[in-house]
Amino acid sequence: MERFDLARALVLEAGEALRNSSLREDEVGCKTGYQDLVTRWDRETEQFLRRGILAAFPGDAIVGEEYPADNPGTGGCTWYLDPIDGTTNFVSQHRNYAVSVGCWRGEEPLFGLVLDVERPALFWAKAGEGAWRDETPLGTSRRRAVPQLLLAAPGVPATFFQENPWRTGALRLAREVRGVRSLGSVALELCALAAGEADLFLAVRSCPWDHNAARIILREAGGALCTLEGEPLPLDRRTTVLAANAREVLEAVLGDYFPAERAGG
Ligand code: 2AM
Ligand code: CA
Image 1 (cartoon, protein in one colour):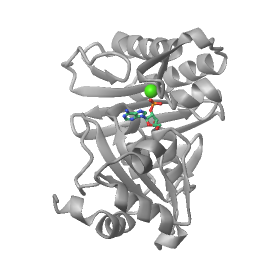
Image 2 (cartoon, rainbow, N blue to C red):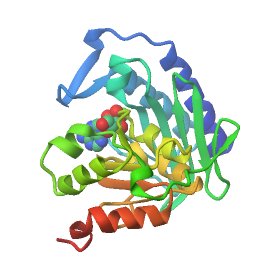
Image 3 (tube, rainbow, N blue to C red):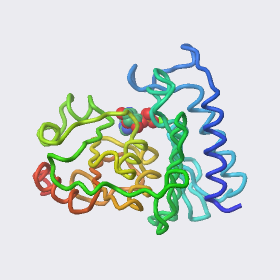
């Protein structure tokens, strides 16, 4: 089986198990604090994905949220796994969470899959072949002027409330766009841009497993991403993320709202 077909089968099976799951309070644990949760389903789902991938492609490397990246790999491909993106939503709502699987060969994107588990809807893209939600082709919105744009911001406290170097620009942007929405899932919010249902995305902290699948989908749908310094998004470390429905919108917002950061100041 090819990597994409394997990934699709694993993601759908993981989603089925999560849809049927129930969670007791004593199965919810804290990582860095009470706002940073992990459940037995995060761990079991990541183990399920890891086992399936390594059984078929033992030389591949895996970077997942819940377990250390212990295998550097010999196959040249790296998989980025978030077993549950939106764990807080999983715990509190049992909806608005995703299974996210991205596969890269070095710096070259291969494919990304993001399953909106409860909808259910599978967002997917193979590099160079467009972006899809199930069987429907996706494209970003045509909105260009800031007052027309809907801003998706998954991490409200970190982006707008806590001190950070981008806060002044983020607050002004939030005031000047059409509206701000926060679903609480980096992967689903980037896919919302791919589907034309939001126009801008801002996160001051996002990890490789959060965005390395959805960024492929967004690029294939016509969108663009970079860091708040205007650099290409790194693959392998936590980063800020600015994403837009089009490259020209990304450049304009970066220049207007985050110019000092871009100049390195
Ligand atoms: P998670 O559900 O996999 O933890 C919510 O704010 C979004 O940001 C979710 O996509 C969440 O992913 C992610 N997130 C939560 N805490 C984070 C952190 N400390 N660094 C980076 N991303 C985080
Ligand atoms: Ca997660």
